[in-house]
Structure formats: structure tokens, C-alpha cells
Amino acid sequence: MPQQFLLMFVAMPLWLAAGAADWALHRRARIEATAGVRESVLHVLMFAEMGVAVLAVLLLEVNAGVLALCMAAFVAHELTVYVDLRWAAPRRSISPLEQMVHSVQEILPLAAIALLASLHWDQALSLVGLGRGWDAASFAPVPRRDMLPAAYVGTVIAGGLLLAGCYAEELWRCKRAAAEPKDR
Image (tube, rainbow, N blue to C red):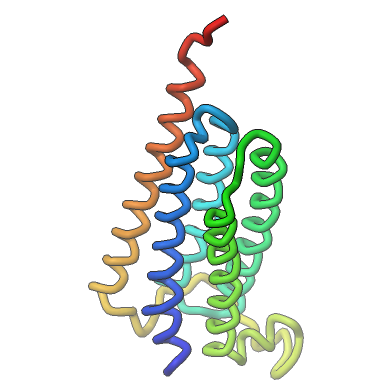
């Protein structure tokens, strides 16, 4: 299936790479000296919001419940992006490159949800009351019947953990800077 290939080998690697690029741009911008801990906490929150959806897709049968979770995670992520930008923009420069990286981070989850819905069309339709209707919608968390290759799942989880480490480092750096005595 081309949708599964695009999800696994285009969207996911690009999304992880964009997350790493965003962290590197924050580091280069020295956010610990400007927007600080609050911005970093918002980054951790965005990572967690989408991380829950990614884990669900990796480990659970994709049904109406998982699709709804992915959509809810996307909406929560976008609301957090808004709060993040409202906080950060007055406090630091957000370069054109960083803005473009943010665009990738925002559009890839939406594209992934569309691809996922096309792979599980009956559940996507049932989620909105079409097709076979609400009766066909399954919301129960069910382990995948056809597991993704273990090497793939392990690689995605390892990439996610590496990225989590990057954002933990960012938060540590921001907390350390906030705790340093300020010159008067």
C-alpha cells in the first residue's frame, strides 16, 4: 500500500528530523536566555501530545478510537503551538528557517492522519456517522493483529527517545539558566 509506505518511510522520518532540527534551532537561538523554561515546557507538552498518538498507531489496531485520538492529539498540538508562539514571539527572534521547520512539524501530522484514514476508510467514515454508520465504529483499544515489523517499531521508538532526550536537555538548560543569579 502506498499510504503505508508514505507513513512509515516518508512522514515519520521527516517528522523526527524536523523535531531534531527544531531543537537544534532552539539551541542555536539560546532560548534559555530569552523565552526560557515556559517555552521549553510547551515543547515537551507538544512532544507528549503527538507521542501518545504515534504510540497508539504503532501498537494498536487503527480503528475509529485511534483515529479520534490522533485527531484530538493534532488539535491539542495546534492549540499548544498557538500558546507557544504567543509566548515566544515577543521574547525572541523566530528565524525564517525555524518557521519553515515548524510548518513541516505541523503539516506532517495532518497528512499522516489523512493517510491513516485512507488506509482505514471504513472506520474513518464510521467516525463521522457515514458508511456503515456509528454501529461500525470501534473505539476499543485493541493490540494490532498485524504488527508492524519489530525493527521498524524499535527504530521509531528509539528515534522518539533520542528526540525526548534533546528536549529534556533543552528544559534542563532553560531551568539551569533560570536558576543562575542575574547581574544587576
